[in-house]
Image 1 (cartoon, one colour):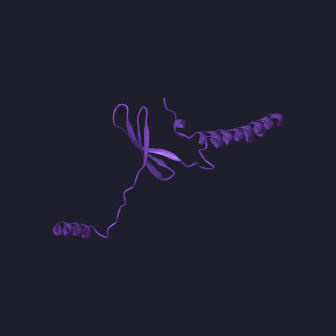
Image 2 (image 1 turned 135 degrees about the vertical axis):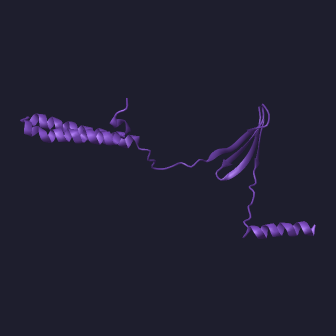
Image 3 (image 1 turned 45 degrees about the vertical axis):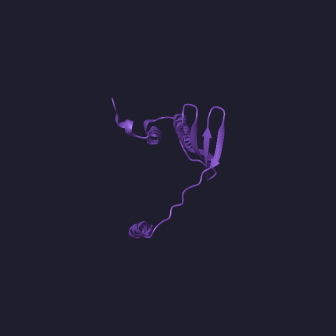
Length: 134
């Protein structure tokens, strides 16, 4: 059975519990509660605040610095049961690695150069000119 508090985040639940504890501590003198009980309530509230702060800091995914990957496999394919080919990027340079049971060969991969044309019509017109000239 789902309750109203199932959809509330843990942080909001903690803040609600803290508010209830502080509210009870504020209403305690009206009921004739001694100063010792009031002090215990305040100490409990401070402990809850400290615990909540610690849990929030611990669960935060804030990374102070990030390490860049020096090497990563971009893609990999199998050529046979015992041989494969991988495209590996190492510090911005790409390499083709052919590997097997007893060998590995590394070649630098040349990246294709993309030429941007100003318009599609000019590119089509140029391709037609090349066809007619040959």
